[in-house]
Length: 84
Image: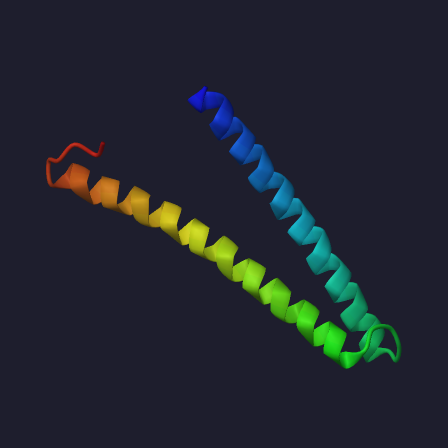
């Protein structure tokens, strides 16, 4: 049961990551169109970029949390503690 839940959560995280990546690609496209003279209004583009920044911040927080866990376990191993 726990293994299925982890697989489902992992799949959901991957889907959210790819949707976010497609959103970023769309924003880059709209930014280029705006620079060349058209597309979204300035406010809509700024809001989109702020949402992208927020999403990236959450993704970065998760990555740093995983790295912190690995480093703590490794340092504990050097001190002779069990990492579990």
